[in-house]
Amino acid sequence: MMDCSGLTTRRRGRHSQSVLEALNVFDGNQIDTAAEALNNMPIKKLYMLVEMAVQGAEGGSSRAIYSGEEKIDINHFFDCLGDIVSFR
Image 1: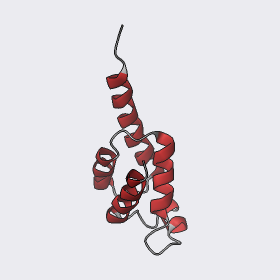
Image 2: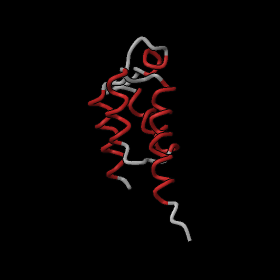
Image 3: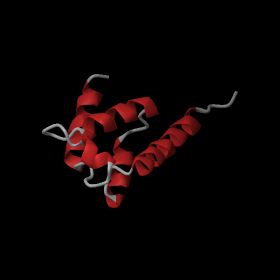
Image 4: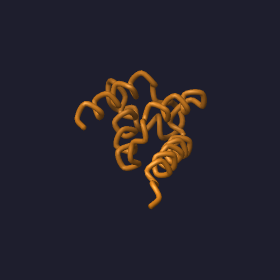
């Protein structure tokens, strides 16, 4: 019997990086940092995290971020990640 858990973990990590790159919500040098911190988070949960982070610390930042005018503040992203991880 073959253990595929490592394969799934690596695949999920690559998908997370690809999702962050496609969404274009981080500065280029922050994508790797954000992807590494996700610890193989399921894609559905990743989208929820990104949606939380694009709102910004004060709220209402999503339009500017999704249009490319602004990028997610990496510190706020980690705050949102901490919120999600604490509810696991």
